[in-house]
Image (cartoon, rainbow, N blue to C red; front, side):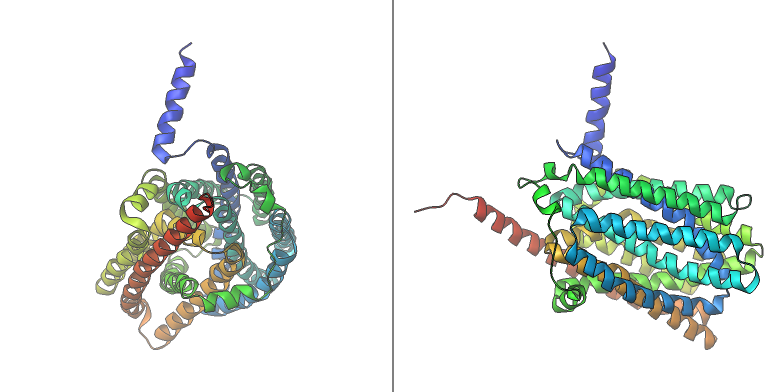
Length: 445
């Protein structure tokens, strides 16, 4: 007799913890399962990619980043065509299964490749996974933004992102534990199974999302979004709001690339063995995700409600100013690792879920096309700027110290950009609420 009240008490406490409202629980659970499987798949593969990037030579990393940008540009057009021609329930699974096929092909190539061929396969895998990562996660968030409202996003996106962190922890743990003893191709097969599980969860979410809207979502789920193939590019540059979101992501990407190169150099110098390098990258990922999880579960939603979207977005650039200034004054291996872990945790725990709230106030076409362009091409363009800038500074004999100095004013500009976006999002939300109230008001004579 006491089990039911106890269960009810636990459910009530959980509801208060994450501020979930009636009817949101099942959709929230499917969203969790969806992003958990997606990130577990990626984080099984990520340490393998990082090791292959190091094995191919640090001097080749800028070229790999350039190839990634070219791949992003090439893939955006067919994806935009799918969005134009097919409903969400078809183009999302089709895109994921295209990537599953790619994983199986790479598993076969890695199993048989040797010598110089293995190096080139590794370089191709590095480029492919850098494309895969941004595309599959961008599609997830575009789907979730299309499902939840702005107010729901402020309350729930941090908690949903915790599902991503748990998936990342599991994926990192699998690779960190097995990398020395299990062949790489077997790890790739594990990632393919997890990605298919994400497709299953996406379908479960699609069956429930109509319950979150006054107008049933099923009426939209079967519709194509339409528009033209280049709408994502055109609409991004035509909208100051979308252009500033692109600027936010580009500034994050440039500064993140500086730190990535520093981390890659540390691994190359400190861990000559391939298995040890892969285990090191997986361990760093594990530290990032463990730190991220607690913030996502207990703080992200509350911070967003307390501070608002703009100030919350500004936390990461503010922390970056402090971190890069400290790195410029006292560069060391420990400081690079600490700043790298804290920045990535801050991005995953706070900046990323709050940034997705920005897309809840744009038209539906922009949520898929413009968002995909920004999340993939613009992000990788920032990688390019960061990679070649770092290479240029190193060629001039300045190295990571100069990159840290340059990153300080970039982070300051990034902070101002975040505050502007917060005000613009609030204005758009207020207009949308006024329009909604007017449309629901009874007609007067």
